[in-house]
Length: 60
Image (cartoon, rainbow, N blue to C red; front, side):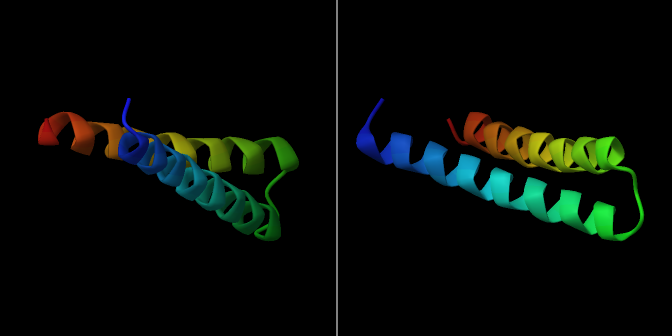
């Protein structure tokens, strides 16, 4: 794995983490329960990573 690929993967993981936290906090502020907010954030992160890996697979 090249340094450029490693940095791209870290950027994708960082972005997914930021989106997960934001989605979880938004769900929590919308009066969702804590477990539901966590699942919402995890779903948002999984969706983002799925889209990223699908784009990488289509590119290669």
